[in-house]
Image (tube, rainbow, N blue to C red; front, side, top):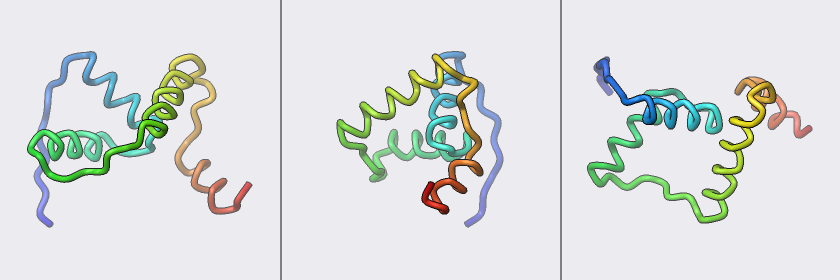
Length: 84
């Protein structure tokens, strides 16, 4: 699939939302923004359950309250693979 790079200017509050989602979901800015555009234009995307939404909000709040606890994706992935 061909890709094109674009520059997008976001209001501070939208930028903060993207950054918080990136931190929790371990995804790139491009992935977050692509999903938002797909959602806007009606392409089917994953819709989290109410429990998943609640847990995401809790995780975002935890990141805000304790940014020093934020872990890298490689650390989380390693933990998941080893089953610790």
